[in-house]
Length: 113
Length: 115
Image (tube, rainbow over all chains, first blue to last red; front, top):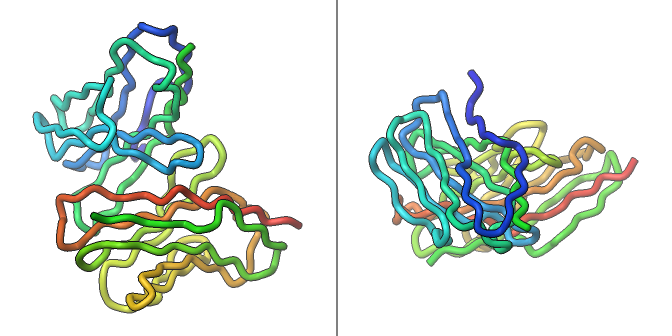
């Protein structure tokens, strides 16, 4: 049982390039999330999904896109990377909302130059 | 609107001494409260949560937290800190009356335990 896995661990992008951050969970969770973590700012929710085919914006969605074609996978797409997107990105999943625990992946560190 | 505050950017404690990491929250209804820990270059790991019931919640690695509704606090505690407890700690809250609401994280508190 691997939990939540993310690839790549680290990536350097040039301004204007695009990339996809991969996230997979093996806990059969319906709910999945993408966060970004900036120093001293805690975690900000980018997008979330309540099940395959259903996604919605979080508090900082601009510059990102997501899709959810399967229960297991929730990729995050960065189009036209900007320096402001330099951050650490975490994917998480949970069995539900309310009081359910979110389980986090190890993160992807992204540097945009 | 919901919010959570961790008033200390950093907490320094000697090994063997009690450790407290403070968290206060604001929600319109009743809260679900969580503590997570993040070790360097790792993801967040769940420590404990308060849903309902006993105000004292026990979690992983000897940590506990006390829910205080009148003070809107959920402080994390450990009776005897270890050097290995040095990490970044996050408090998070969700409003029970808005179950579709997002989980709101605090800015984090860096804990440094010295030998």
